[in-house]
Each structure stands twice: as C-alpha cells, then as structure tokens.
Amino acid sequence: MTPRVHQAIVAISTMMATFLVILDVTIANVALDHMRGTLSAGVDEITWVLTSFLVANAISLPITGWLTDLLGRKRLFIVATVAFTITSAAAGAAPSLAVMVLARFLQGLAGGPLVPLSQATMMETFPARQRGMAMAIWGIGIMFAPIIGPTLGGWITDNWSWRWVFYINVPVGAAAVVLAWLFVPDSATERPAVRRVDVPGLVLLVVGVAALQFVLDRGQIEDWFASSLIVSLSVIAAVSLVALVVWELRVEEPVVDLRVLRHPTFAVATAAMFVISIAFYGIMVLSPLFTQILMGYTAMLAGLVLAPGGLSTLITMPIAGALLNRIDPRWIIVTGCAVNAYAMYLMATLTLEASYWHIMLPRFIQGLGIGFTFVPLSTVALGAVPMREMGHASGLFNFIRTIGGSIGIALVATLLQRGSQTHQARLVTHASPYDPAVWDRHQALAATFAARGADPATADLQAWAYLYEVVQRQALLLSFIDNFWLLVWIFVAVIPFVLFLGRRPRMVEAPADVERPAMVVEG
Image 1 (cartoon, rainbow, N blue to C red):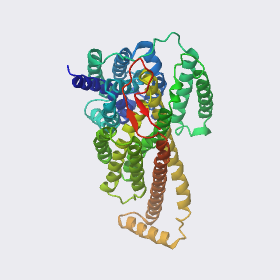
Image 2 (image 1 turned 90 degrees about the horizontal axis):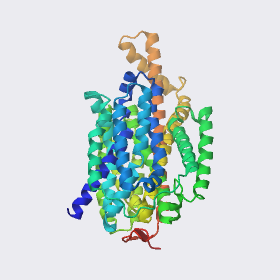
Image 3 (image 1 turned 120 degrees about the vertical axis):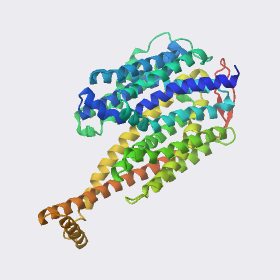
C-alpha cells in the first residue's frame, strides 16, 4: 500500500467517527418533539437529551491527552468509537426519558475524545508540508456535519422514526472501528504510560466543567442569576475551575496538561479560536431564528438559506490548506475574519422585506470566511506543539473551542431576548393612538377587518392586535441587528490576536525522540 493510499484510509476512518460526534450535536434537535411524545416528557424535560450530551462531551474533551497517555492513541480511538456506537444504539432503543438521558450522557463521554484524537492522528499521519491540507480535509467533516444535521434529522424523523436518528450511527461507527483497527497506526510519539491517576484534578474537572456547561446551556431558560440554582452552579464552576488550574500546574502528571500553553503560538491561537467560536456558534443560532421567526420560512426553506454557506466553506477549506505552504497564515486568518465581519455587516442591513437572495448572500460570504479562518488557525496552533504533546494540546484546543461556542450560544440567545424587550418598550411609546399616523393606520386596518365581516368592536381590537404584532416584529428585528453588529466587532477584535502569532511559520518534521515543534515560528 502506498503512503498516499494509507493516508487517505486513515483520514476516512478518523473523519467517520468525528463526523458522527459533530452530527449528533445537531441531528437530534429536530426530533425532540417526536421524542417528547414517545417518552412522555415535558417541554423542559426533553431538552435534557441535548444538555446531557453537551455536558458529558465538555467533561471528556480536555482529558483526551491524559486518556491517550493511559491507553495509547489508537486503542483510545477504537474504545471511544465502540462506546459511542453502543450508546447510540442504546439511545435509539431508550424506553424512557431517564434511559435516554443516561445513554446520551455516556454517548457524550465517549464522543468527546474522538474530535481531538482524529485531529492529532491527522497531524501525525501527514508530513509537515501537507498538514495544512490535512486540517482542511478534517475541517470539512467538522463543518459539514452541523450543516446537514438538522435537514437529515428532519427527513429521518418524518420518513422513518426518531429512533433512526441514533441507529444510523451503528453501521458507520462499526466501519470506522474496522478501518481504525486495520490502518490507523499507533502514535510514535506517545508519552510513557500514566503511573498514577490525578484524582483531585479529575474531580475538579468533572464538577467545574459540568457546572459551567449546565449554566451556559440552561441559564437563559432559568432566567440566569434570578435563579438560585444558576447562581449556586456559577459559584461552584468558578471555584472548581480556578482550583483546577492551580492544582494542574503543580501536579507531576495532570489530567489536563495546561503546560502546553507555554508555547506562545499555541496559546495565542487558542485564545483567538475561543473568541472566534463565540461568533461562529452565535451565527449558527441567529441565522435559522432570523429566517424562521422573522421571515416566516419553513424549516426546509431555512435550510436552503443556510446550505450555501456550507457549500462555500467546503470550497475554501481546501484552498486555505493549499495556501498555508505559500502564504503567511496570519494573512489568511485576517482575510477570513474580515470576510466574516463583512458578512455580518450585510446581515445587519437586512429588513423584513429582504428576499431569499438578500439573506442567502451573506451566508455564502460568511462560509468563505469560515474556510479561511478555521483551517489555518487549527494548523498553526497544533503545529506549534511537539508531537509528544499533541494529544493534550488537541484536547485543550477543542475544549476551549467548545466552551467558546457554548458562551456564544448563551450570549446571543440572552441578548436577543433582552434586546427585543428593550426595543419593544421603546417602540410602544411611539405607537400611541394619539399619534395621527398611528391612528390613521389603525382606522385603515379596522376598515379592512370590518369589510371582511368583523363587527366594529372586533375590527377595532384586531387592528390594535395587528399593530402590536408589527411593533413586536420590528423590536425583534432591531435586536437581531444589534447581535449582528456585535458579531462584526467580535471578528474585528480577533485580528490583533492573529497578528501576535508571529511571522510566517517554517514547516519541519519533528522526530519522535526530539522535543521540537512540528511548526517552528520564526520571530
């Protein structure tokens, strides 16, 4: 077997497992209502199907490096994929909400390490000069899964059953296990096996991350700090995570090796990815809400608005990977941030009369920006770390990305609701019946409703109700615009981070016995 064919098989096997994990974050969303009926769950209760997965995923992500040291990269990848496949089948067969939540929690635990493991495997399998393209291939799987997730989940739920949303993971997961067993090599740069378990660090991590993820996921539902539960969990998260940092920097064999942040390029790139993830995930929330709530699009039409953004991302990721060996990665990332900022500016100019094409164009442009941002930033970050630390670095990098995304979702959801209330309170003061323009509009509407058969009193109420609905929609539109402008400035704010990455990187091969980064940053 030629090296190129072997690399392709490794890429396929690792991407299959990673694709399933990312897909499962979004594919179940559209099936929640069907699950609620089958499992006899309330509206608030059924959301635990999502929350349990996200909490468990956030817990296992940062300990990927430690688990790799404990089991070995190949063995951990196979064990995690097998566990993810089995728990997917268990979720599909769940007879009750309790079993479903437990299965999803275990599924999240199993899936957490798969993303950083696949990333680390790709970085080691491909030679240094090809790692940009390797990250592009890996990124296509990462970005494609959330794009097709809602559409695929809806189609499966409508035509088969919501249980098949989970059952489809079984054959794909089984194929990934077989390919990994046969073709994925053991890492040549793994650390010596773990001699002792960092129990205090593990406990602090589980408690802190679980509390933080719960706060971010449920905060808006519980009205944030008006809830004593959210306040208590916020304190627990803050204390636990601060204690975790202090402890992990002192212990000899930490469960989360924060010492990888001693590499300046990795630290800066991780910080930049954290900020960018806030915006990326914020966009993923705002775009479908804008099309369905404000514009009245069906779920299918909303998907057609979002799909071109995924297509443009698939186009630019390989281009960005190819350019990494020719152009200073900083300028590729800066270009991506600028393109994203421009796309959000276009979204901020939309009105309620916007056509499909006016909404689709910013999404297409934004997809171009994602391709020019995600691939080079991931490559630069992990390329600055010695191969023997790749597992820890990849786990921490993806954990920070996930937490940034959770913050972004919570941030825009809160600002959207609060902003709508603020704008509505302001607009109502201008919608007075004593305003001649408002009164004239009311009279015209009342006449229209009366002509349709309503009696005068009913027509009067219908006219005021219609005007109030107009105020609500305008207030929500203004809140969307505020959020889009916030995302513009977030992308702009990332640019100084990027400029601190240093001059153009020089790719080198890193022997396993030399503690040297695979990408040396000059300057």
